[in-house]
Length: 109
Image 1 (cartoon, rainbow, N blue to C red):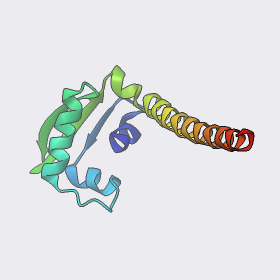
Image 2 (cartoon, rainbow, N blue to C red):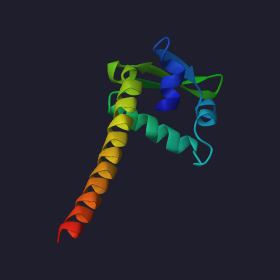
Image 3 (cartoon, helix red, strand yellow):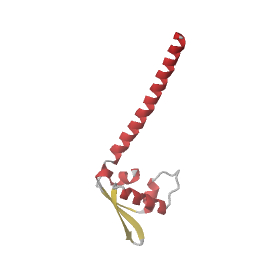
């Protein structure tokens, strides 16, 4: 969704080929056209965008139109990361407090 958002966030609509989309995805995962098409279909079902497939000069093209959930993707992504970081910090703080209470109880008894 990050690659689609980076392409479409300005106008809300973009026309892209599967090869161009694959070039924008992280190289550590081996993406094929079938994987990209299934991922796009799943994101379209989740109402992030409207997906239309077409042919241009014999090459498959995707027409992607962002929906309101797609426009809010970046904000939701940042909020999710912030929530995970907050839980991580909370867990560390709880562990430190538990350790200190344990030391305090050890000294008392």
